[in-house]
Length: 387
Image 1: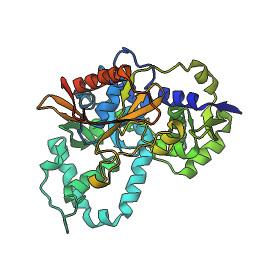
Image 2 (image 1 turned 90 degrees about the vertical axis):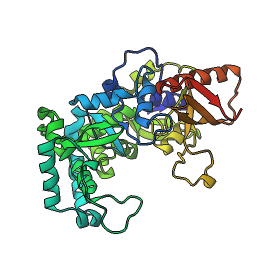
Image 3 (image 1 turned 30 degrees about the vertical axis):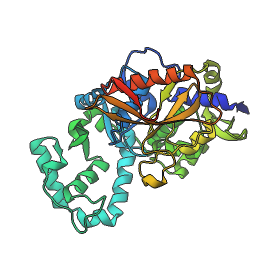
Image 4 (image 1 turned 90 degrees about the horizontal axis):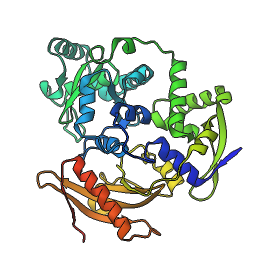
């Protein structure tokens, strides 16, 4: 059995996530999304929204309008859920038909949706979209039913979401991150929309593509990658595909070896591994490299939690704190806030990890990354508030 060192595992994972040896590559936003599998969407614009930051981390030529442009062009990407709301390459759409079915079955059993949805309401929305084209939730006037709570939605919003989850509607485009809904048949290319893929083929694709993008993973990690399958389905796939898989052991943060699965080309991947660069990179809290916090700890010995939903008095670090990656090691954390009108990116707090040596050269590398990050959102001034 092949044994993989902790450093090799770090390099494999970073390489799989497109964070190794970033140079002046030609920018291809769609290809970045294909390579990653998906890019998570998030509403919070602390400096820039998570999806923009994730794409910029892979190519510094990325600009904020580019993802919206790609969606608006049509036929390139679509939005749906992986572990959270994400954009995915449109060619993956046939593999999501099982996800649409699962969501429909789940929501049809939900008392919340049962109490709100009705056939007439669904048909009225469909008729309006057919007549008027893509619509935003503010184009409707229904109100919240019952007690108004934090996550309450008007009837039309709940109905639109239901049809979006089930694949009847798709996101046509966004304006200022506001979603406009249209019929999936108007958004997804017809050959892709009508492509028939068996459930077995969908499961095989989801498992094999997840493992390809993770390089090495357990059954649970394969399941969690897209978050569309059950652990039973993944284990059955592993059992039925043993001839195309290899068991390996990799060294975790505590020096223990963990058994996991990989593809048959793992030795070639290990041979091609290169020493990581010494640049410092600001990583988004929703970046695919770190979203699985358990895997993050096991590989990098780095404890991380986003504290946006933690009450201020209970936060250990801060509201929106970014991990700092250098080479194959997380070396610190930084709390940032952008004020676009004031043309200022503020460094609120900075912490280096225990054992990390911080000198003028390290500071210079961080300053270069901060300036580059600021330019992504059109800001020229970086101000350290804690100095």
